[in-house]
Length: 123
Image 1 (cartoon, one colour):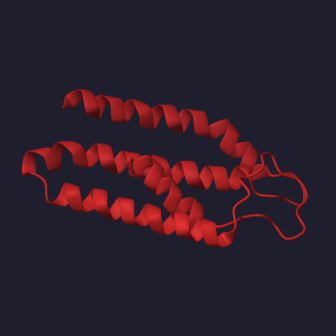
Image 2 (cartoon, rainbow, N blue to C red):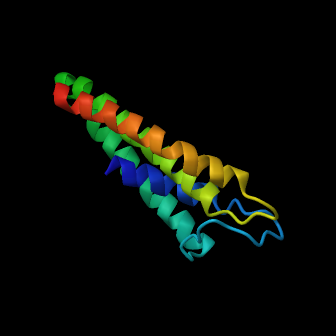
């Protein structure tokens, strides 16, 4: 839940990263109005705050164990949203950022997944 919520916050908050006059893109982003993106960011923010509030008011032992997992989930959502915004941006020439994201993202995703699974198994 924290992964999806943090992705929604960043995706909606960043907005379109396309260059003016850009005609090339690697992937097309979902066709959402700016109002829908802002609503998605606000809803995601409410969910993230609810998760953090619930974590804050939980037992100390649970909070200590779950805090790292939630933190890495939020970080993963942030990286996912930024990467998707870069990959879906229109560029005038070559979209070098999209190429770098496509090359590097699998390694970052696997590293984050390994960390979260190891933390989860520690519970």
